[in-house]
Length: 361
Ligand SMILES: [Fe+2]
Image (tube, rainbow, N blue to C red):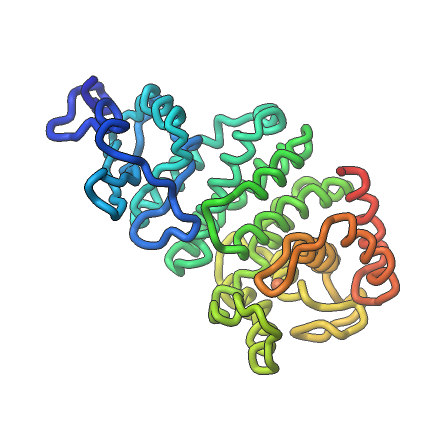
């Protein structure tokens, strides 16, 4: 079979690697979870068979006579990704392809367009569809968190679209469980910050729905939850990944992150007041022992009080480089016996959250 363009004309000079000698002359290497460099992995499930691609797709191969893997173009931008290639890669158990990092914008636009075709029923019934939603959000975050040029009003609109979609999925069926299971399975990204933010956002939307709060507010709450730790990107990675206890100076740097997040977002269009307050106040405690402003009780925005509970629960149950994850059961036990006695959390919100966890599990 010859490789064809979008209008099915043969493409000159293109090595039809996926049509012929893939298995015979190359050994496909699996991606490393800490892949670095000019390419970024994209799970294969996101390539719609027989649809034109607006970006270049590569596979990672290891020639038999060469010890180092290399990236090989398998479908150039503007070509149709053949259904046969999809099948072939699946049969070879190749979980992902690659795209050049500088084409991230086109990839994001493509994934965003694909999600418009996905229905809430799909996501509720098919874990792979739920995973696709998260792939798109993860890529969005990767770009937004690491590149200042990505922090634009149109990117914010895209995030609000994703969150709208997720909230719709959560409201209409059991998509919540598929979404949280899919987050646990993300194994092509090494940044716990992204997984934490995604988890807090999905969890937050499910809890928001459980509390019966207004639908039109859900996406604002969701975007605050998604971006609450944006300022962590300004903290040196050696502090974030340190496995020993942090010293006073390092703690000071960590504690700057709510204000850093706030300042990074404050001039963005489409970012209203309530999520700004969530971002700024998500480490404030009811008894005034939090940071950065040492606010107390009702001076803390109600959405920031909700986020405070979800954020703590997620980080305790997911673990960090410096501490092991605790099971939901153990965390729930601690919540009942320690958290309820303290004045850190809003009592009514905490009680509702414990009930919510009991109902969804
Ligand atoms: Fe935080």
